Length: 395
Image (tube, rainbow, N blue to C red):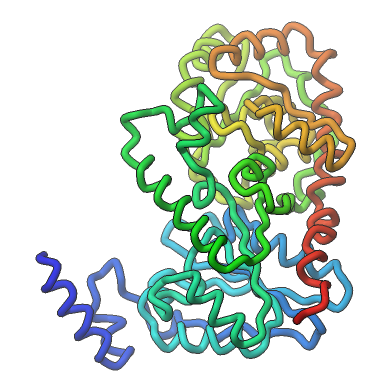
């Protein structure tokens, strides 16, 4: 369809009553009026935090709960829900088509946040209020600030990580794949985020230490998990055939294609039972990790994220590729060593053979995981970090 025709149709739909436009759009863009949620309500506390709109791996919800560990703080997490959502918990789920096309929702949501919340954290440089401000996050930030809301930015990864930087420091970087067509768009996205952060000057949090290389002024806001949900009483590495699990969120980023052949070879030898897990609902993942000995995480970014933390909390042995900068930052921040076994795609096969041959050497690493996850990732440290934003005097 020619672009002018699309624009004409969009203009017509915008002028129709929502009860008509919601059902006359192309099928993939429709929604029901019954699916348009009420605006979030802030509690009667001194600090009222709104965090939105992506909730990657349920982190918006977990950070909201961490914030509530602070005195006189309440928090609401929101995210736009897409088809095939993994079911992570969130306070204010909104169907993605509602956020895109419901002008009534956009206006109500903005008024609710601007009028009743004291603080807002914008995740991943994604628009908080759909197209209300032409999907421009800088305009959203300024609009909230003009209403007295203190705003911070929180970056998860791709929206801040510059491919041109990352490819220089890691031979395994996915941004060295010249045939990956998304690299130019990732570069543009990261540059756009930089422009927004520079223009607004808002405080910046990053969810993983590696992103501090992209924005050194940021604060590391540790990922939060429900540690007790993942806890197991049994030790790993006790089975004759080691149970190895790999649960890639994105194969090209995790490096699945770089390790699959060697892991299949070990599986065929009978040394390991290798499973690649995809599309499993979040509620079922504790059982997946609990029924494994080794979780192999990612081999291209040099970071550790939610999956590795959950596996550590379960007391499983985590094998992954981490940059020294990440280990150093964790050590300097917590005086703890990061209990993840280092491997790269070309060393992983031998590393798994070593683990199978010398299990007593690696068992203490796995056993250190639950305490590490609890101390750094149960929400207490994240609450301490958030306090610098939430509890400072407002101007």
